[in-house]
Image (cartoon, rainbow, N blue to C red; front, side, top):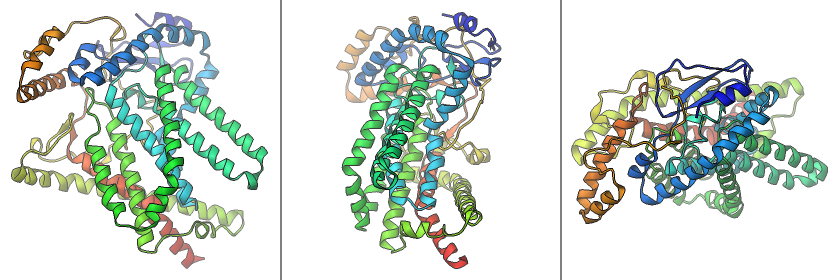
Length: 507
């Protein structure tokens, strides 16, 4: 089905059809301006079902089939609804409000609470929303579902989140968990601010949530199943923290050595066992980043207790005792110094580890055999060094928003994939008949089935390799863990301690 219907409904939009044809792209509008061109860009989850059925375990393939069936039912009414409801003003509104449901918004705003004397609430927000980011990233790579079919739906997006799978909507997860957390905080302050202020705050948070969640449907970025699933995950994360939050804080405040002994291997385990998707989706990078930041917060909080370096919240806010100009100077100096230290850490540690880790990995492999390497990542034995340009590569979407960026190198199709059945050329080891293949697998030994699976994966990697993809390196995984663990420790613990010492000396 072509995009004629949509382009007639919005006649000022022109379709850029300069790219070559493929079946793995969707139609995007990267600006809310009425004369913006449409771009066809690659996105994951858009290959024929047969490929996913071969790669995914049966239960994951079943979940994906069920979600894809819903997508096929929704595609027409979503496109018709878009044509009826879209306008220039609404486009601009939902285009910009989408920012407030991104990982970027959360991770940019979060350090402010640590920098300005609200460590308890800052940790709670980090753990609630961080859990949501990890769970939604985990679920995306688990089921590998596409976003709403485009065409007929047209996507309106400023960020690179469309290069992730569809289910669930991480925007919905983030916005719901953020809104519920702040709604709870407001209720706790009811005796100080008054119930009328609490109700006004709740109304604003409801508007914020409706704008972000509803905007995912309006902009064609998610289906109803995506936003419902994402919203339920956000609610679940908030409820979980209500149940365990006080106990977790008490556990870390006890200073027991079990805090690092449990949190470090648990984090590494969650990174290692993150589902491997069929397509090259950046969800894994988001999961690494947020898990590592949470780990850094845990370790920093525990260390501040053990070393007796913890700065009371009241002491962090004590510096704000002067006039407007004085307080403004404190705010700016904290932001500049704090954020500067975080980015300096990232630059120095990332560049260092990307040079040091590959030879260490190669030495370990010589002694113990091949190390586990994720798909789409090169093992250290397959390259000499990591290119220096990787050091300056964009931070992943957990702290990066690439506004209006178009990927002109991505090939583009004449119509949406998966809307029609398509027979594929199979690898030699696999029969085109699913029943025959399954019968043969049942009669095979475990070792034979592993060989079949390895050959299938090798074939699928060749099928899925896109022109313009950058190489990824195994050293990047552990590097990200170290970098973002450090960022979590620095932002949540060391920087507040540094502020306290500097201001005590200067003031």
